[in-house]
Length: 71
Image 1 (cartoon, one colour):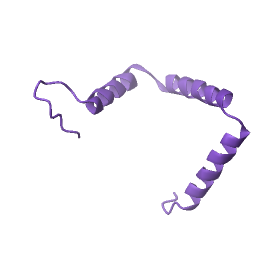
Image 2 (tube, rainbow, N blue to C red):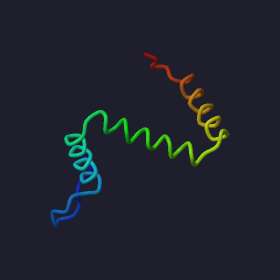
Image 3 (cartoon, helix red, strand yellow):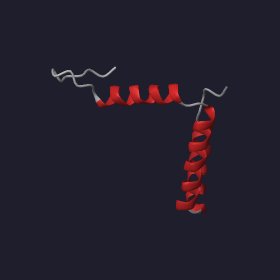
Image 4 (cartoon, one colour):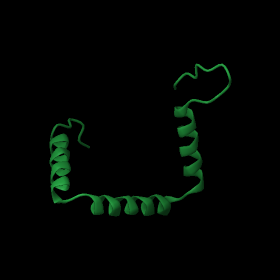
């Protein structure tokens, strides 16, 4: 965990983000995360063309091929 070097009891950004994420997880269910994932996917689709998906698909394929920890 990151050390907070401030002596005035302020929490680090890392700690604040972790706490916020934990609180969000406590307050929302699986459907919430599915919904925001779908919204993000829709926005990505609106903002990028076929070449973008070709490029990330190619990168993903290369990465998967190099993975020695296939389950």
